[in-house]
Length: 384
Image (cartoon, rainbow, N blue to C red; front, side):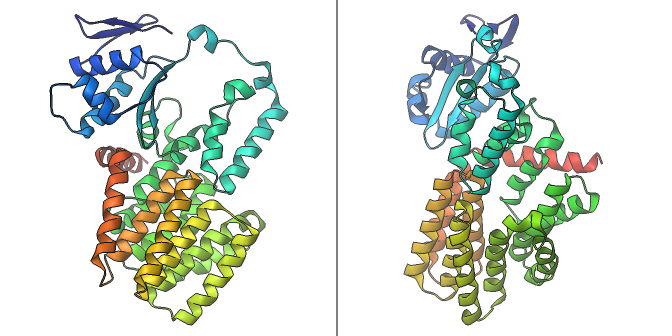
């Protein structure tokens, strides 16, 4: 694909489609277009596009967000987010897009790749999922529709999940709901999730996961841990079924978190911790290993063992980062901050994790997307 850039009118055209841009949007696109495939940090883009001005890094994010929306009708034009660094422009030639690798029609290969994505998903290897998804053309396969959406959740791409035309709302709804749960005031999120469960608007597997697992944390963080204890009776009944056996480690970790909050004695928590460690030896799921370290760190915070707590919390966050599941690291930080807000002592630790959470929210562009996210979800619920 070739972009035609009209500097006098701030217009971009391709394949018969013409789009009008604002001056700085045009300059940003022009610079990225001249340097296709190269990644630039926000600071570099500010220096190149706003050289004599004094904008903030958020300026770049806002312009990228608007550009993506305006360019959405141009197939093959992508402004990619390189997490932790910046942005790059990539374009796929329309003629090349029509060339189909013969193996994309191979049903056996399709099933094999879906199973492989499923394994990586199960083991919490988000980076492996991303690597595999970027090799579709080379490997000659078509991603399963579920993982085509899931991969955007894994990398924390809320903007795509909100605005894409490549997937219908029912395919995106659960992932949007998880982003909603992972941020903000727990009481409001809990009330919303209870309505979602009541109206049964999710697919059955997603409904069940929300009902037996996701909601447990919300009960705790909303100040109703007794409801979490009650719901755990249902959770244990469900995960005893063969189809839910892989939920056992995550359930055990969340259950330990519930008992930390309700004040269960250390002796019982020690037994829980030992049981989880054994589970993770048999099922070394990266997400769960990271989450376990975070929850164990919260237990040490309760015991006011500050140094050990900080070490465990940092280790847990590092493992979650290594897993590549961006929302899970965000949820780990959310757990830490909410718990720290309810214990006394060591304000420096609380401030540290609040700062990290705020920085990551800003880096992912979540602060400006939370209102559109909430509006979208409430409109979906209202329409049913």
